[in-house]
Length: 182
Image 1 (cartoon, rainbow, N blue to C red):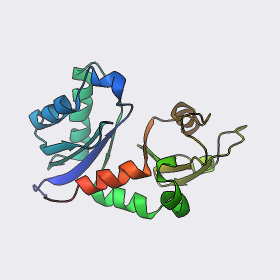
Image 2 (image 1 turned 90 degrees about the vertical axis):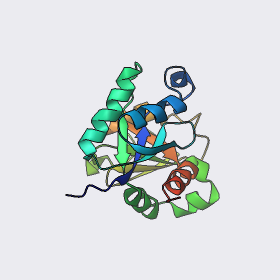
Image 3 (image 1 turned 180 degrees about the vertical axis):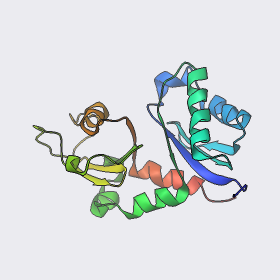
């Protein structure tokens, strides 16, 4: 059994201005340290934490869910290792979007791979967004503004039958860079 700490990335759903009053990024780092995670670093202010832990994934998830609950939050937590995030970046089905308009390319992280039949836009939705499933991630190309799109995270969660959390392409690069040693 490996007792050396692995690097983990926690992507916490719906962390933003309204939740910071309950859980600041400094408090999140402190809570992670108190749960035995080594060197927790938050990336951006949107609930991305990079840390090291030798604990099993399920135990890490339980600790992070406990941190959320201790602050009166029910935000879902999605764990990935740096190699998994690198695979996600390499599997991008929309490479031209990553180059031309990276802030409008989102990846939604899910706990389980959705039904492959769901690899399309929700029934009756006319677009213009494009959507592709790759494993347990959903790549979403927003050719127009994300904020005014009717393809909201809530609609996608209903479509896939499970909660998720999304990050844009620029954010994912910053999160992965934070995983580098040193």
